[in-house]
Length: 241
Image (cartoon, rainbow, N blue to C red; front, side, top):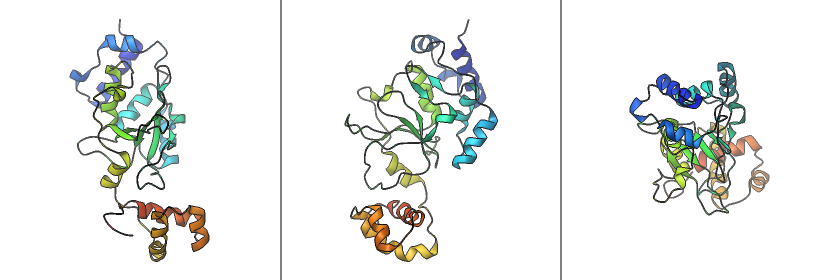
């Protein structure tokens, strides 16, 4: 008799039109997950409320899973319940990143590194990319580990819930911030702020603290953040603000 998790995975694949040949081995599910791995599903209203609050649409594969099971648990949450999916916490610096994109959300926290998703764009031929946060103490950097939720989820299940992206020889898909800049447009900047952006840009690139920039320019927090988001989107060696 199929386990509850096996049945939910089969339903998820059917809902999403996932190729049946990619179905995880039931023995892998049985070895990797206990009876409490899946939870009661979230309601459509809960998912809609989350999207309204954060301003981003959940990708279809993730939405379908959360409706079937509000999260996925092993020794720790591989996928958070919808109530715990929130803006990611940056554990280490990223090149040229001053303010992280509003579209970066923590999806799960299996161990040292958090698993995150970028809801701002779709990978060419894929979906919303999945990346890990990196960990300064462990010496790991943020890196994209899957080109869509579906790709990551199927691999996760096939590997019995293990962090397969930590295995030797695993090839990543690059850095999340570099990819975000490549595939999303530069945030718009209101006309009144464009002139002062030329003054703010060199200060940001020189590493001046935000509070000091605000003191020098008289900008409020929201306007300064808008300028920094605009400036940081273009690599310094490509164009100046």
